[in-house]
Image (cartoon, rainbow, N blue to C red; front, side):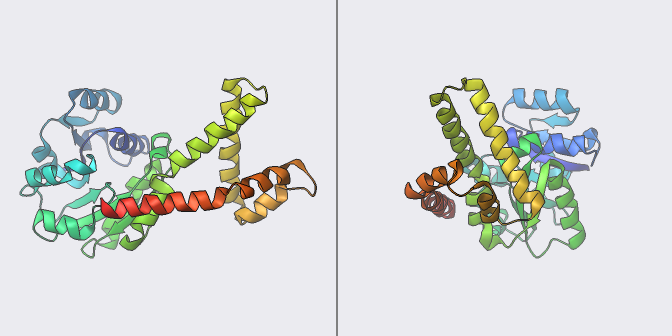
Length: 265
């Protein structure tokens, strides 16, 4: 048996594999991956030395932890292909939005050890955040193994499945909001005369630094904002305009729309 198997070897799977191998959680030869595209498998084999195959059933048979890392629209097809290859001792992890634990039980036709995860793309640079929702068959020891895997490329936190849509809105889709904010700040800097490359450098570092202050100081974001806003100063004028234009309500409405879409998937 392989320790970990991936059906699908796209960006998220590669981020996970890179973290697992980098942290030496398991040896590369104990990881197996399948994918429709041979190019993705060749890349993974060359980069990390893992085992690769074009056979999803082989991965399902051999993996102790089986990660379903295909796009959501292909989940039903893949499950029909592998459902008779898995057994009650294996852990089956999903990283697809909108697919509930109950849905997996229905699709596989029996109770198995399912874990629903919602990672995000900063996993590609080792800074992901993943929610983890196991079903009642997963033991504490098994959950710890999964958490070790997920924390090899960022942070992970156990949450009830009912929070999955909120997680998608605040975590899974959130990098897109932040990228838009960075792009907008860079555009503002360019309009004020800064060269484009330096505008992206300054804007992205400002966001990174602000995020680290939230994480490392333990202070409320509002308190950190107040520390920057001197009376009669430049920052409070910028904040006034953002409030006037509805920054907060726009973000909240966007996240609500995101969660609503996730529920319907």
